[in-house]
Length: 320
Image (cartoon, rainbow, N blue to C red):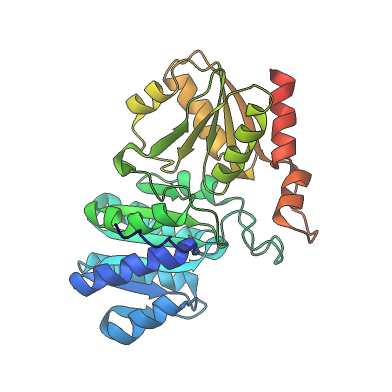
């Protein structure tokens, strides 16, 4: 029997863009719009489908309005830019032209933000993105998809094509270890339970799923078995299935590469526990403090802001 060649680790954007490219070869209604942000796969899209590709330049507000116009004409649109710029620079346009407009007119617009959290670690807070979960979740008619690895990212374009609406796909900029290479994921559930634990369940999103795996491995050596759930759909996950996944836990530990206590994953979990009448505690772990201008490794910065492996283990042990 011939063994399959191992899958080469790639950045999330590359696998997602490759999937979009392959769909564009089959579906003449898919349109791609970029805000002067490129990649080798985008070069292929521009070369092979020039009639369905626009680079609007460094003009994210225009990116949103052009995308909305194309969607109103019946196209299924992917709009692509750096995460802080496609969410914060053009927030009013997203609110008015997409979130509001999609309430009265059917449209399919998918915003791709590359560089979630501290992805661009050496670029400082102007290019880092800790506010986008809060901002994008604040709008009705906006689905937020926060992805943790390249395989999950590669599945998203086909998923986005199945449903009308406006979605924000939140991608890490770095090449990360693969999590879902040999795992079948039901995207409609909006989450995946990687590991069953006893008392604590780590509910993480995006890059922090990788941190959760490391935390769980370290705690296992101390004979503390914690669960891990990757919550990748932050708006429309299956509440009934999620409740089942949480059965038996006493404490949820929410983990996000975003500001703590400012409307992100922790707010989602606090609200969820209240509305579901769950008898469960919550420890919210997110970026503590203010903007930081220090240059260092992602691991070092994470420990400094309270979301590193050592910092999280310390918090959990203090509650054990």
